[in-house]
Each structure stands twice: as C-alpha cells, then as structure tokens.
Length: 282
Image (tube, rainbow, N blue to C red; front, side, top):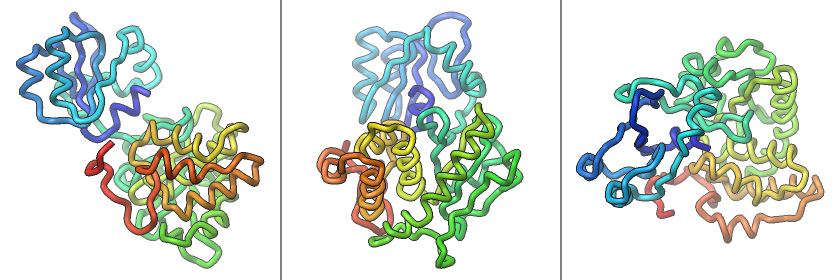
C-alpha cells in the first residue's frame, strides 16, 4: 500500500532513518520538530521509521487526514518492487497512477498523456481507454497494440458517465474484461492501465468489475472498498454502481449497493461531473 500512498495528492514523506540509506524522492530526512512545524499543510504523511514523540505530534498538526508509518524493513521490498522510487530526497517525485490488486493500474488523462514516459516503470502491457473521444491513445507505449482497447459503445459513442448510463456500461463490460484478462494472461508479470478522464468513475467501474470477476466471494461493496483504499478519488456514478450490483448478482453475489451508499457515500455520486475529492471531509 505504501506505493499508492506515495501517489496520493498531498502526501509528504518523512524518512526518520539515520545513516547512508536508499531514500525516496521528495522526502524530508530526519527532520526535527521545528522543521516539521514549517511544513505547509498536507493531506497525508508517510513516515519511514519512528519519529520522536514531540516531532510526531507536530507532524499530526500539519496533516489533515492521516499519518501512515512504514517500518524500515519494508523499504527493501518496496524498492525491489518499484525500483524507480529510489532517488535523491531533493528530487521531485513523479506521481504515477495507482496500482490495484497487484496487476491493475488506475489513473486519469494526465497519466494517459504521459504513458510513454512511465509505462515501462510499471510494466504496462495493456490499456483500456474509456474516454477515447477526449484522451488520445498512445498505442506505441505498450509492446502489443492488440491489448490497447478503446471503449466505444455499439451506438458509436463512448460512455458518458451520466445518469442512466449504467446499461451502456454493462454492454461494453464483457469486451473490456476480455481484453484485460487476455493481456494479463499473455504477460504474467505485466499490468493493465485503465483510465478515463478523471479516473474516478468509468475507470473505477471497470476496475471494480474485474475485482468482482477475480474474487469469488466479493460483493460490489468489497470491490469498491478495496479500490478506494488504493485510489481515494474513486467516485462511481450511481448508475454504474447499480449496474455493477446487477453484474455482481449475475455472478451469484449478494447485492450491496445500498450498503455502499450508506457506508462509503464519498465513493458514489448521483451523476454529472465528479466532485473534487480534496474539498470533501473524510
């Protein structure tokens, strides 16, 4: 999960480990309480190692949401899995899409526009573009263009992410899932990148559907909860949530869309343009 925390908007990295050790880009190394007091307010913090209590208390005062801790012994496996994270602490950190369930990568049009720059970092072998009318496809960024899928409905239009669009999601879902599964099967160590414009509703819906297909005891609630922990921007159009609940029921799962509305209201919306998740209370 540490990789995804690093990709969230507003995450500050505090490395409390002394000595000559591998570091993460854009991190503060062994800061004291006064240095932390000078930090701009941030959404989240990732602390590697242990801070003194005074310094930790100051950090909590500068963070709006959560302070996460990464034990020092977990740095080595993190950097083995994502070697590109290792960098000089003063170097700016590249913000990449979120990795979900190991082999899915979910992001937005900004990530898609720079796909050629980072695709090899995350071993991208397939792409599902859910906004092909707005976001140009960069087919040359992956090894086999067979697994670059632009999602168009049979009516000739893309998904619109609007109220009542759920049935159209179900129409395009089988081909999107087949493309993802074929790409992953053909490339056992590869990942598939799913994106729309904002990476909140359409892309999240396809990712949730694949999680449902791959986890035989999961409900829609389980899939969205899992996804949202890794990509907090997740905000499914309610029409898509209802359609995915139907999809889950077709797989023999209990319906859970009402539970999703009640317990994870920030991750569903009625329709229209997605709200800015940074402006909402946790």
